[in-house]
Image (cartoon, rainbow, N blue to C red; front, side):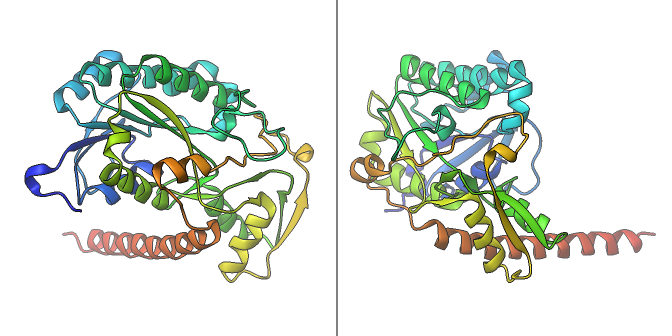
Length: 326
């Protein structure tokens, strides 16, 4: 049930201009008062946001205590996995220290924290789906920073929900489908690894799941507890087949995807071969069951096409206005 204007709890979203943060703000603003924190001004947002460097404890504390939100949703992170592998100090600062600052300030006002983690906290060598109770063993340094953040939340937060998500894609950020479409516009053949398997997950679906959670499962969100859940679109696929799906659905049948093993890649950070997380707990405890990754990807491709057209139209209008300036 939609809440009245007199009963619109305030939700603070960190990284509100990012890929997930933007869709969260869109999904939640009809039912909640939304305020965001960002490191720089973001033009595509339709919710208010303050500038705040989350790596600075005092500024983070001031922002959270000033707004006093009912819930803090922490999406801000340094997500370039290869960059993290080569810049450990910076990765820790943005993924662990910033989270620590968020948790400490939220604890002061007794606000629950919803945090997003990753399949990279696991090695990826397990046969079968990873459970929330499986012992983490990070495959790369990005995974290590997120695991440290998870552990701090589990030890220090008064109320927290941690969602591990795999292979996230969306309109408002860097993601695999966009990279494939960009490459497909320039080449007739591309190579993609075929031995890494996961659940492609659409930011819009995660955002709608959070709306459902906040409206229908308040007792879980506000429980004086700390829990870990796995969340994602249903179904699994490897990167090469995911690329073929994107190419085919975009009408680019002339572009061929050639399978290669991960051993042929020379990227700084290793990736898990098995990124498949069990969705049973989030389904049974939270009632969250996301649609298939194929259906989600089709909607993303349509959404991305519309967004590109809107952006091109805006740029054309701005260019014309500039030419007509006296």
